[in-house]
Image (cartoon, rainbow, N blue to C red; front, side):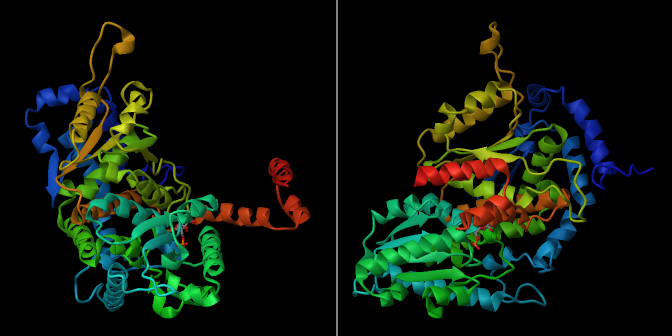
Length: 523
Ligand code: F6P
């Protein structure tokens, strides 16, 4: 009989089989698994495009994978995947399709029945024309000088993706312009960047899907004031601004003409939008041809995701391994460790992708879940991370599954260091003195690739997007809404209002006391 307090997931046969299997696996050391299976490294590794995933350093056997794949089949991952690619409204709470995959598609028409490709092609052409003009210094500011500095103003998905990719691909950047990013509500963020810019030669790209985000509009207003004050005229705004938005009306009210507005659509989530015009700063930095390579890399991963069997499907494997530790070993966090300075923004990017998508406690049917969803995703660039927190990874009390991302070319000994870390986490080391002992048996995936180039970055980002999708399907949650960020925004508006009596009536005693102190210190 079904236990009514359980959700469909935890009451399911696939879930219970995994729980039973975990009890047997919990006491097994990976050293033993490697000793038993001489071909383990080969058996548990997979290549897709230029990415090599080694997942042999996990507490798994072939049976574990078969049971996890059973869980994915039970959740109908393949069916949901088809629904996403068909443009069905799988983002049910917002009644929207989820079609970021169309942004990198090359098909003439996609998806069947709701072809968005004419819009996508037109937007790509617009991006190409504009980025070419900026890079070719044909775009001039109010006083006729070419624009030499680009400042992207956006936050969340309108910032993290282009920021991360511009950093990751800096060696491919050949534009005469410097490209900067400003996101924070703290005006010092913009102030600092403006110390590196001249009003006559600066282009601001205001990226906001909604064009209502307080931080972005506040920074855009400050930038506008800086410009108008220096150049002495409101007519200076249009030549120095462009927008990326769905909200042309609000952009026009700000003073940005429609021909300087680049589109976005409600079927693209903010954290999935870097493939769209949100990628404009990246296209300016590296050129549209290389941006197209980025799209091609993502497309290759889409094709792999759609066609490979679940057991040999890279995003599916990453998703299942994550679920294995989160739901059956109680791991509460997951570390992302890129071993290349150029990837230093990747952990922050993946934090939004994973945690804004799957940080949900209610399932698609509106029922509270009785299982963990996304773990805390965190990390930092290696080898710096080794000298900061790896002590805890090796000898701490938390089980922290790790992803090592290892580009091979031009990263010095960083790659060897990454492999040394995962080897140490696996094997550990015995010692007479307890403090010097390493238990090992700490799981990690290694994703290795030759070069940090646009194509590879496209593959890598799409890999994580699909991992997040698969986990969301298995957890039976909607990965594409983000209602959890709304309440804080509303309260911030209440706290910012001038009417302090109204604020006090609305707020709790602690917040009111802190606000009183804040006002007194400010004055
Ligand atoms: O508040 C969260 C969020 O809605 C993210 O999902 C989004 O990426 C970000 O704000 C920025 O939104 P917008 O692009 O509309 O300014």
